[in-house]
Amino acid sequence: MTRHLPLDRGAGIAIWRQIMEWLKAEIASGAFATGSRLPPESEIADQFGVNRHTVRRAIAELSSEGILRADQGRGTFVATTPLSYPIGTRTRFSDIMSEQNQTPEGRLLGSSLEPADALRAKCLEVPAGTPLIRLETLRIAGGVPVIAGTSWFEERRFPALVSDYAETGSVTKAMARAGVTDYTRKESRVSAALVSEEDAGHLELAPGSPVLLVDSVNVDGFGKPVHCSRSRMASGRMQLVIES
Amino acid sequence: MTRHLPLDRGAGIAIWRQIMEWLKAEIASGAFATGSRLPPESEIADQFGVNRHTVRRAIAELSSEGILRADQGRGTFVATTPLSYPIGTRTRFSDIMSEQNQTPEGRLLGSSLEPADALRAKCLEVPAGTPLIRLETLRIAGGVPVIAGTSWFEERRFPALVSDYAETGSVTKAMARAGVTDYTRKESRVSAALVSEEDAGHLELAPGSPVLLVDSVNVDGFGKPVHCSRSRMASGRMQLVIES
Image 1: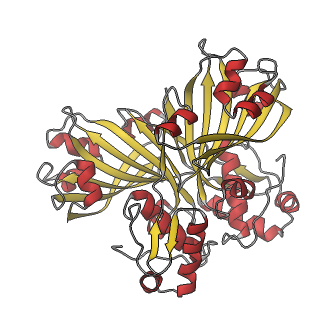
Image 2: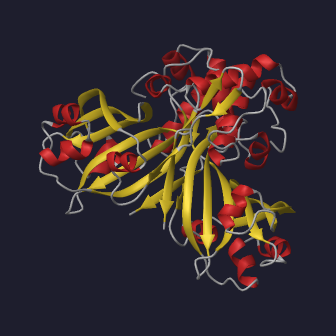
Image 3: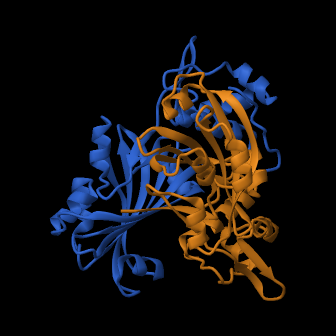
C-alpha cells in the first residue's frame, strides 16, 4: 500500500465498507495479486487511523464473498482474480467461462409474461403492449454467482422459452430450439450502480456493493432484435474486457 | 415506479443514499426520461416507508449533481440523460463529446515523475523502474466534470507531455507534439467501484457514489503501448457504449 485512503465520514457509507471497497479495488487492479498475503489487520488499521475491528469487518465481508481467504496462523490471502467477460459480437457466457476453466451454469430464478413497456418495445422493435416473456436468471461460474440478469423475448417467437431455459440453463440453447440458431450482440451499454437487495442475495454480495449494469441488444441474422437484457455483474468477480 | 425498493438497514449505506442510487438507476435506465417530473417527495417517501426528509436529502444530492432540477412550484424534473462514451479503436474524448454537442475540456490536476511499478511496466511493456510521467486529469463536458483520469507515459518518449497537455487540454494533441500522430486503443477493462474522496471532490459527486473504472492500453502504429490509463467515470452522467 503506497498511500492512505482518505475516509469519508458523513458520506452515508460506513467506514468498514469504504475499507472493504478500497481492498476490492486494489485486488481488482492487481496491486494485491491472487495468492498474495494481505498486510496484518493492525497495519491496515494504522494506515487508515481506525480501530482493528473496523478492518476486521471489511476482511470478514470479503472472506464471505470468497475474495479473501483466512489461513489459520498464516494470515489472510487474496483468493481470486476477477474473471474476464469479453464483450464482442458473439458473447456467449458458456464459452467465455469454459475458456477460463470455469464450469458455467445458468439458473432460472423466475419468469413472467408482461406487456412491452416503452423501453422494451423500443429495444425489441415491437409495438408497446406486445406480450413479452421476462426471464430472471442467475449465472454461476465455478460454483460462484457472477451475473444476475433479466431478459426479454417476444412471446410469439419463443413460446417455450421458459421451459427450454430451465432445461438447458442457456439462453443460446433455448433460442436455438425456437429456430434462432445464431444471434449477435448489436449493442451493450455499461454503467455502474449499487446492488439491489434482491440481487445482493442472489449474487451473495454484501448489500450495497457496486455492480456493473450492462444493457444489451441481440439481433438475429436479419438484424431483427430477438433478445434484450439487463445484466448486473458482481464487480469484484467479473470485469468486462473490450479488445479492439 | 412499479415496485418498492427494498431498503437495506445495516448495510453500511445510509437510507438516503439508497434512495438516491435507486433514482439514479431509474433515470439511467430511461424509466424516468429527461424532462419528466418526479413523483412528489411524499409519494416516494410513502413507497419506501421513510420520512420525507430522507427523500429530500436524496433529491438534494441529485440536484447538486445536476441530475435533477427543482422548478419552484412545479416540482422536480429530470435534467439530464447520461452522455454516451463509445469504446472502440479510436476513442477520442473531444470528438465523442463534440458529436453530442458538448464542449469538451481537459484540465490538468497534477503530474509527477515516478518509476514504473509492476502493473505499469507490464502495461507499457517497459522494464520495472523505467521513469514514467503520471498525469492526473479531469475531463469536463459542457461544464460538467465526467471523468477523472490517471495516465502513464514513458518519460523518454514524451519529455514535454505535461506542459503540452496543460496547453492543449488533450492527450491526443500532446502525444502528437511528440510525434505520435496516431494511436489506437488496444484494450479496455471495465469494473465498478465506489468513488474515492478525492475523485468525489473533482467529479462533484456525492461521496461514495458508484463509478465505472476503465483501465485502457493505447498503442502506436507499431503496436507498441504508448499510453496506459485508469479512468473513473461518473456513472450517472456517462455510460459506455460498445457497438458490434
